[in-house]
Length: 129
Image 1 (cartoon, rainbow, N blue to C red):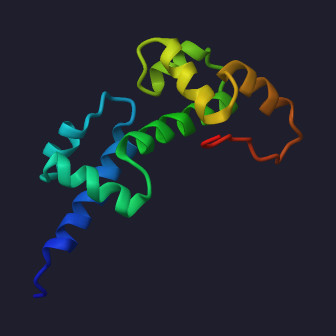
Image 2 (image 1 turned 135 degrees about the horizontal axis):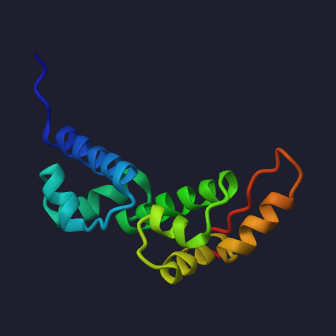
């Protein structure tokens, strides 16, 4: 049986942290919560995550929520407050603020523009202006 190195074990923990974010993005996720779940110190996880995924845990969580919001805006007729709730926000304003930072538009305007585009058009996302 092959012995695992510490680096391999840490990498597996970082991947597990990403999996937790992907599955639980709608919950309040903190660095401390993730580090407890994967068995890694918060400091070590905060350093290792961007080395693997090229962005901080917070940015990854925001993008997970934004992408889910985009999907719900395009595929459902849910009102914005329900989409905010589905993506982990208890009120609409923080969701709308986050969404506008990611896409450049408020959720309702983004939905209107995307739904008026020709079929097959890829939704526009404005990242890191």
